[in-house]
Picture (cartoon, rainbow, N blue to C red):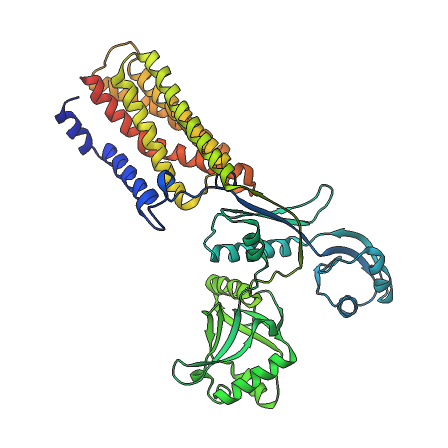
Length: 485
């Protein structure tokens, strides 16, 4: 092609869009924060298989008991909590979650003392608690900049309830991984004195329990929490000395996690009145109404817990992938990708015997991979499953480009522009139907929490969308310009 043809192609919006996306992807991979100094891999996020790191498997120290009783369920729960010194949560009308490792033999006399009996006994936690654990762990690792850490709940065969949680942290050694999971975070409550000045009231270790987000009669969401006797006394003294009891609006209650403000609001008038007469152990922080109020309440609950899980966990398994082995995996993947691209180029050249067709095919396919990596850099870590998705995108991409080329050159001759558009439209229709089929097939895997398959599905879906919406139209324009010459 001469320079005039190339200029006309670049001016076409379809080709220009591909070039802009390629440039933007390269900027995102190599020039955008955090650093352009990572070599060939740039800012791409790699999974445990390719970067090295650690994994921990932890067991919930909790049991689920189905019970039968003719007495008061409230008395049963209260007696269990007193005897076991543990939280006891009622899951439904027939099941209790006891947040402590205790055998059935130890529980039976306690139930009998409350005129109740055990129907079934299983280790694990309720789905609500399991989701809460996963949410808190996600919040902890996300706060440390590890958005792609994998957190999976594991349910043993034959059990109804999750018993383990597995965490995979890429690029983190074993010691650091254990510190991240076990770190409580420094939670502090302060009260505003004069201006923007605040004084210390208490730390998170004075909080004995934290409730789940609840909505009051006015529709406002909030989170309840309880203080120790010493914490309640310190809270009352700080509220009195600062003037928060007499003038709540001028003296906000401020909550901080690792010196960052997570909540700030004045004392409630009723609470201020109670504090005049004595300490108050049970408090509630209101976060507002609607969906935003609920989201703020859920976030505040995590902060109040200061990273503490609702149920104790013990590490029962751990392992690591050395960084050197991860680098070996990376090199193997790069070699496999280059061999795949080279093999595709040889096969396509053998079919058409025309470099002017082969080179645009490979260029478009390479551009598709770069765009896909540029998007994945922000939303998906690259593990072996995701790399398999990239290779699948290369193969299906070339297939679709061959369909377009064969349909256009159906009789071995270059068609007229009108006939070209008809044939191209027919080929694109075939590709669109095939892409829709792949999209529908991969969508459940992308939405399900299956770590070994989710990356493959997400990369495949992104590749299909990029191909149909961006690169296939551009290739149609390029191949038309080439064949016309």
